[in-house]
Length: 386
Image (tube, rainbow, N blue to C red; front, top):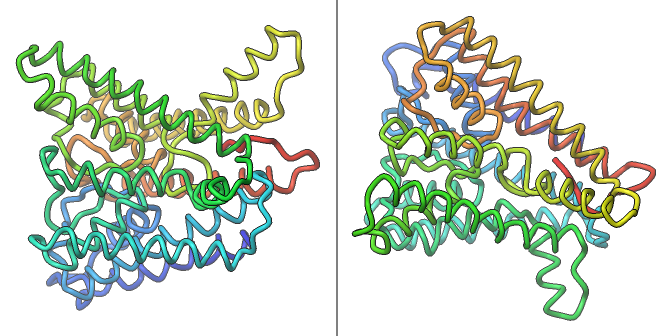
């Protein structure tokens, strides 16, 4: 089932790229070049959400609809595939059709929330914000909300957290209310979500405080740090210009992007369990107990992630020698972790653009394969990685 849905994911991207290459659809006097059309399709369907020099708002209505459909399809397939892979690890008896229905209901709720709560932006812009938040995609039709907008903190960021943890955690929380114990996997995800949020909240606040002084801590710096703590771990809304941030903040953002969200959700990155499982293994070793099975999966996924990142960085350095290495590293991490934050809108063409596309596809598809392998292993780990 997962292989079929993975094929459907790739077919969705291919059809989107072909459609966007047509001038009457893209809304441009000349057709998009194949690399540009492919990038826009991959960027939308993988839910990465890089801003580009070719803006969605400048496309024809048909082109905007296709991009919106790619984000919608990417969010639905990510939740469905993730839920199917995760149900066995969590010990849930739930049909794949039920997971699809839950994912559809969540997306419908996100669309309605965006439509109803952003009337000042128009229905299309509001719905893109809603489904993009649930899908952890930073693509917007006009502009992202400001940090001072209450709807960012009350609607979009909670939707990003919900989409990031995935369908299985939703189901387990509902069943917990009815008296069923929560699996170790979901307990780990919920605990790590809170812990990592607090860690980056304090880290970003400290950097803001050291950079801007104490006088505006509670009125501006804490809300900004709270938004950055969630936004940097795969949502990727363009809330602030990255180039204007302190260099310490830029490197902290790279660290946050690499950690990412939870396995089985719409976010990317190494995932929260890449932090919890090595710590749990270390604690067990100190107690003279055997390490948990998840550690071997964590080591394997970390090795794959870092190898892909290293090769991609070398390729980008060769293709763009005029660009500072730290900016190329930032873009490479952002693409592989499906965050979409960048210093400047993506303007690359040719091999450099295809390299970013490969990173985005790897960041979305390899975790699917890892979760599928864990769910079918002879000994299923109690906590998923990937």
